[in-house]
Image (cartoon, rainbow, N blue to C red; front, side, top):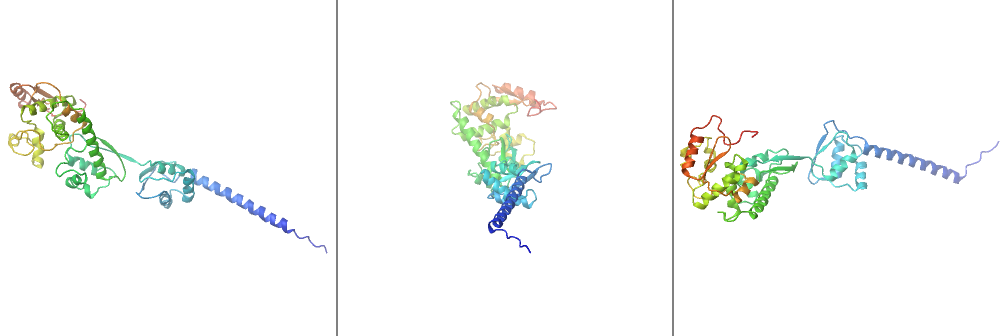
Length: 354
């Protein structure tokens, strides 16, 4: 009987090592294939894309786990390892829109860049602070804070003196992220107004009847409310400035309406013109105590650069423009023509498209 030769120990060890190495190579290859698949294959996102929120204080690891729990990505640890390898572990809070067809690498890049969804909100010239506050709080994905729950609390949060918020919000279109609070956006608009007023004040004409930029802001709000045709702003400013310089009352209807507040029903009467309020410029001398609306840059510029001339009066013509007069006689004639015999389509602002 012939005995089989025993394999030498060295050969047996080599065979085991070779087999193990092959298994490791196969496992590594499978791992690399899985990792590549996890990174490049489209994520589970519908045709309309996926909107998701990253909370303030979150990190990439937590965001990836949350998306994995929702079935959007697989192998979140692989994606996290890729982010570390790419040095793209930064993340920004906010709402994201992940388009259809995006992969994990796209996701990491968006989170690292902070490509959050942004929203637009417009504050309109001539609005009051209350209207602006309501518009801000109605903004999409704006966080309504307790500080923004009323005009009084918002005024305090902005660091303004009581009853002095009017006019201090710059009317413009603002871009913001999801999660922005009402006060954060108002503060941005307030700082913008301060900046614009400072710039325009530095470029003002000489010999103006203002003791401070705030008085110019008050005047700008009157111009904003009186102007129907943008080209008339500086001419209206000229009338108001000349009246102040001559000690004449401004006698502008928008101040009467503002002073009436909620008591105004849309019909301004002679009784209203004689009714004493701090804002009734038919009764008081000089400027009202605060602005009456949000003035835009053009109205601020007009207040600080009024048009030269001799007109002291103006009256609406019914098409959004005004007739300007240098004498009371001429003005009364214009009132009879344009006000006492009002046309059927009379309007204080230009028709749309004009």
